Amino acid sequence: MIHRTIIILVFIFTLNYNTFSQEITDTIAVLENATDILVTRQEGVTKVKANTKDEEGFNNPFNYMVKVEVNDSIDEIELEDSWVFNPPFVRKNNPIFANRNKVRRDVVCFEHLYSGWRFNYSKNKVKDFFEIGIRQLVGIEWSKGQRYKSTFLLGFGMGCKIFKTQDGFAYGKDEDRLTILPVAYGQTVNSSQMTILSFQVPMLYKQNIRNNFNFSIGGIINFNSYAIALTEIKENNLKIKTKYKGFQQNLITPEAYAFFGVWDIGIYFTWSPLSLFHKDYGPELKSLSLGIEIYSF
Image 1 (cartoon, rainbow, N blue to C red):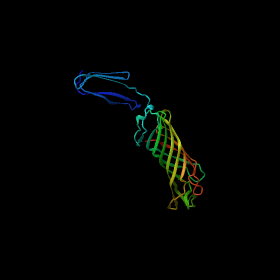
Image 2: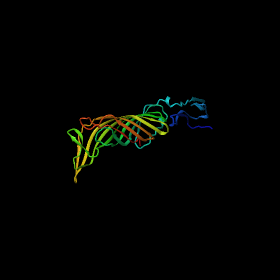
Image 3: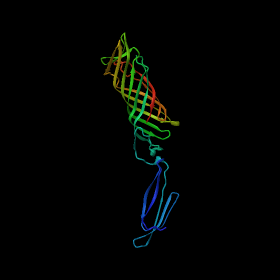
Image 4: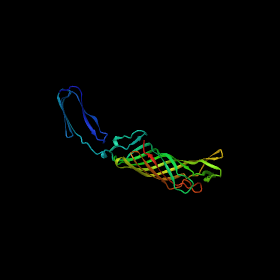
């Protein structure tokens, strides 16, 4: 077939970015008044032959040959470093990195929502108590691999711990010291609890294992920024409510952390080796916790 219009010869290059495979077109040449066009392709070699005419009307043969070799290894393709932002409530899907055996960085938000029970193993008048929080309001994840992906997390979050006294005891305050004292005869304690608000810096390692199971280990640094104690005592028909603030709690308390789950939900365990208060400013509070954690939404 003879074509006397402008013919654009297009060559197809295939890039193998694992599942992110697509074909990108490029212009090889522009021929005018081309005849006898023949395009062949065999074993990765593409040949183009055609006859064209110059300005004086003489025949001018056109020959072009190119060989394309496709590299199947994504590791040998030098991709630029990149940051990936994963907003909450949106499924993570970055196919260009799916099989990439290189370190990938993700900015993540609203992960590691937890709620559990803290067990007090110190000898004082404090019951086992409750905690809730989100370990990662925002953070950075470094990950590598796909099926058995390894991930390191550095984040910033916050949590709340609630400490209740045993029956017949109530929180009080002696200057800067938090006290736990028995109530007077004829009085009953409706409630007496202390709440600690903490900022958290988790440093965690996560490893995926078989059948969607995964585990994490690491440490959490708690910055205990705010503490308040609320006590309600009933005497006869009178209720007395008292609020105490301005305690001298230890500003920094580290915790050891472990997690085991399937997909993005599982059971976590933490252990705090340091007391929440120095002995001169409050009761010794050392505890461990066990609860449910949702890794990501």
